[in-house]
Image (cartoon, rainbow, N blue to C red):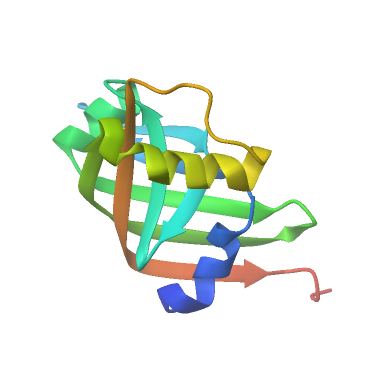
Length: 133
C-alpha cells in the first residue's frame, strides 16, 4: 500500500489538521494535532520551542503524521519520516506564516519561541474507503 510522497502530498497541502506522533523517552508514543504544510519536498509543521514534541524530536527524529479529509472522513493519508531540520527565530517565521495563512488566512499571532520541523517523508500512503461497500 506504500505510495510515493508525490501521490500523497496533496492531502498535506490542503488545510486539513494532521496528527503527529513522536516518541517519548521511554519509547511510548506522543500524538498531538498540528497544522502542516509542504515546503519543497519536505513536510513541515511547527510547535512551541522546547515543548514535549520538540524535546522528543530532538532526542529521536522519527515521526509519523496522519491526516483525514474533513469533506470525506473515509479518506486518509499518512507519512512516516525523519525530521532532518529544525528552525527557530527569523528563519522559521516565513514557514510558520505560510502554514498559518493556509488555515486562518493571516500570519501566525505568536512571533517568538516557535520551532519549525522539516520532515523527509520516508514512507507514504493514502486510502479512500468511500467507494467501498
